[in-house]
Length: 350
Image 1 (cartoon, rainbow, N blue to C red):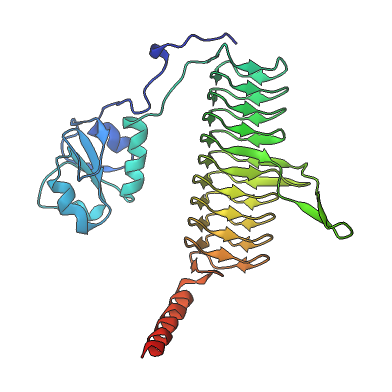
Image 2: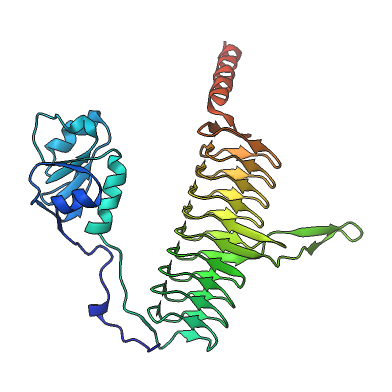
C-alpha cells in the first residue's frame, strides 16, 4: 500500500451536506409522502431551530402543531399527522424517530477517507491490510494483524499482534486494541477506548496476605455493527472469551469485565460497570451508572434503570420489565417501597 499525502480533496467534512429531494428521502426511509416530492431537503434539525431546507420529526400528536408551525420544509411524523389541517409536506412513518435517523445517512453522510498509510505510521511487514485501508499519523499496527477492506485506523491508535479487524470498521484516535482481539464488520470504536486489556482477576495467598494474578490469557470477540463509546474498557477473557454480540451499542465510559457475554442489540449507557462472568441477554437495556456484580445473569429484554445495581450471582428475569434501585427490583415494587418510606418519614416528623 502506498503512503498518502494529506489532501483536502480526499477528505470530506463529517457534516458535509448532501441535499436530496423529498421523494428520494421518502423512498429511502420507507415513508408515505404527502406534498411536493420535488422539495429539496438539505439538513436535519429540531423543529425549535429549523430553517427552510430542514427536515424535522415529531413522535406524538401533542407536538405536531409546533412542528408544523416551524420553518422546516418538511416533517416526519406518525399516522396521526396524515389528516392535519395545516398543510406542510409530510413523511408518514410507522416509527418517525427511526425514519429521521435513517434520513441522516443521506443528508449527513459520515466522513470518508482516501486509502493509504501515513508516512509516520508504523506497520509491521507481516500485517495484512486490505488495499482500501486508511492508516493515519503515528498509528501502530503490530505483527500478523489483519485489517479488512475500507477500514480506517485513526491517528495514534495501537493495533496489537494478531488482532483481526473486519471490513468497514472505524477506529478513532488513540484507541488501544490488545493482542487476541477480533472485531467483526462495521464496528466503530471511539477515541480512547481500550479493548482486550487484562481482567481484574487475583488469587489471595492466605499465607502471606498478598494477591497473585490469575491468568488473563483469553480473547475478546466483538460482533458486527457494534459501536463502542469513548474511553470504554473491555477486558479479554481470563481463560476463555469476553463476547460483545452483534448490533450492541456501548455509551462512553462503560467498563466490561473478563468473561462477560453481552448479547446482540443491547444498549448500555455511560458509566456502567459490568463485573466478570456476567451474562446479558439479547435486547436488554442498561441505563447509566448501573453496577452489575460478578456471575449475574440479566435475561433478554430486561430494562435496568439508571443507577440500579444487580447483586453478584443474581438472576434478573422478565422481558420488558423495568428494574430499578439497589438492589434492582421491579419498578412498581421499588416505587411502593419509596412511598412507604415517605409515609414513615412524615410520621416521624409529626
